[in-house]
Image 1 (tube, one colour):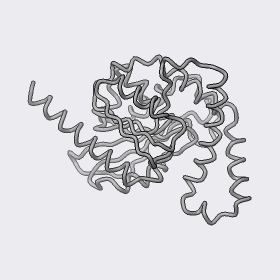
Image 2: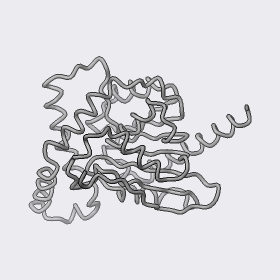
Image 3: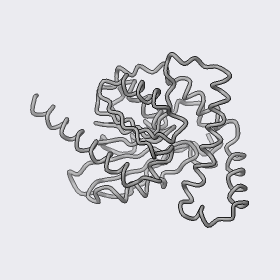
Image 4: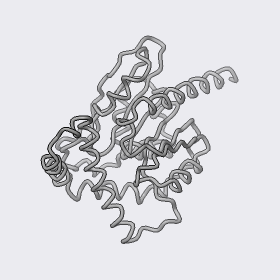
Length: 266
């Protein structure tokens, strides 16, 4: 499949015995989007960002396999079990697939940043489809702004609009269908299987994950904790890198403490 490859980029080599933290990006996003967050973490940690086939300008032929399988392929490249897997949006749902399947490759803990979740009592309707499409369009546009950072403020508004329109045209309906199918199917995941420490990180300014959906998702996983920040949007891992990094660091500490306790009890 053209462009359907998985790679791993080392952001920090770390020191022996230090935690291994792995990042999985969202749809039409890049492994490099994790650089701001990685810069806020302990430089002694080993940090690896996966480059997954739903990267920008992909041909979407990777959809013949479940997203979780692609993520598992990336995790196989590491040669070690992560202390924590940090995944965003579409990548977070791929991680959720593996967690619910009791796949050991995600490691000892997971941070799901702005995942997409459909509570089971919300049926799939045309209204939901239309609302999801509008949200998807806005996310693609916001993603362009987020990745540009401060440059977006100094870019001519007309030029910026053209850039966002081009991004939407490049993604096309295939991108939306990939997201909507994943969102619709999320209601059927066996969340009760997820017992390892899991952080569901949501934003009050993110229309893709309502407070109700985030609460239902976290409530269905025995090992989950939910944190909702009023000022976080769908790209909080970029725009609020320092705050997200602090919460990831807490999760890493929790995972390692849990591992030590389990070892002592054996």
